[in-house]
Image (tube, rainbow over all chains, first blue to last red; front, side):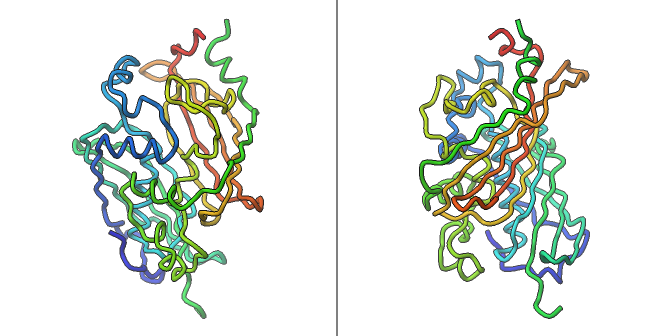
Length: 147
Length: 165
């Protein structure tokens, strides 16, 4: 659920980004393929995935970027603009997995562009494996006028 | 016969430019948000978006970097849209992405994507040899404003099935 606007002036290094839990379902994986015009069968066709040596259809790695965006944007609120997002995929995610996005603020600075907040992010599955690690985001917040 | 590494090395420096046949559209934004399960009103509620300084709803930021909607073609047996040139013709797996977003993308934006292969290199680890391919894609709108950039790293096992083709 989206939180109300967070004030840049209230953010400190070490603040936790509110965790976000995402449940992976095959229907959502198919929806993601359709939404991105990416019909690669590896992400929904079990027989095809096994033929190619995978245990099951797996989540499109870029879907993690969508989850991480939701994670940081929900925490930052609608006034913040995501400037950068980077992530490394480590472990594949499959239908039935429960992924939790975690994050912590690592830097806060006022610039001409606005109030910039950097975060370290990572994502774990229900077995505690790091599915995405490392990851990072840079958010831009409006500065209060006159300060 | 060329090795997979040689085939991929030949892609370095290649550029493909693809212009979308139409606008991003409103429902594309909602469809992507639905797939993620992200019901942020910035993506669907114009009044809410305008109340937060946007001229219209914005696309979920990563949408432009992952969608193929700007490619106007059929799909092949793998479910892959054809016509993207040699850059993405082989089966690769994703190592990671680095996105940079320069401004919000709106439903009336017509996207032009510029794909360039920046680097191909091989790394040998305990599980064997992997080939990495670094691709940079920049996205522009109809006013040639830079919207976003995506640097993605794909990897291929060496030797891989693609080596025989």
